[in-house]
Amino acid sequence: MEKEYWKGGNMLYPVPAVMVSCQKENEKPNIITVAWCGTICTNPPMAYISVRPERYSYEIIKESKEFVINLVTRELTKACDYCGVKSGRDIDKFKKLNLTPAKSCVVNAPSILESPVNIECRVKDILELGSHHMIIADVVKVGIDPKFINKKGKLCLNKADLITYSHGDYYALGDYIGNFGYSIKKTINDN
Image 1 (cartoon, rainbow, N blue to C red):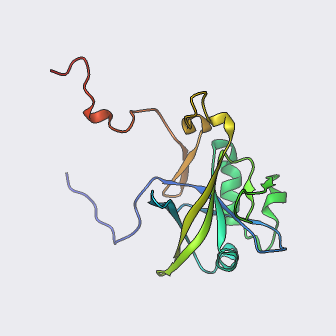
Image 2 (image 1 turned 45 degrees about the vertical axis):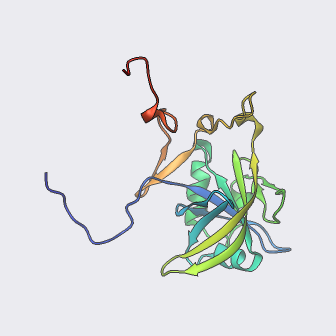
């Protein structure tokens, strides 16, 4: 089988689709949709988002040096898409979308109450890489909706109906396949 080859480009899909909330002091909060984000390090906990510098939220984050990564559920998908195509320069996205800006635990940027997980971040560095600047941040606190924590204290995000973004389309996460290390666990059929 021969493959078709395209010019170099970003094809690492699917990626998480998240809503990043931010706010300058004494101004209205804003939300930007980001698909280029992820974990950098476990210890110390660090994450990144990549944002075009001309985006309204970029200056807010650069000045305030903090933001919140809010995970997106199937129910929040339309709001997530809207926050990616409309600018906070023109509208108050929290009001327009009937989302609740909740007080965060550590940072001044609000969390989105309707999100199952809010990852509070403080900017550590900004790498100016080209069309997007990578904003590297320390994760300083994580807020979790208690309905996704079972009686044993385990986080059950599979019940949150989270979404991903793949080459222009949104998808809900699918079927359970296995847990970390399942490929090397012994089963009854192993000799």
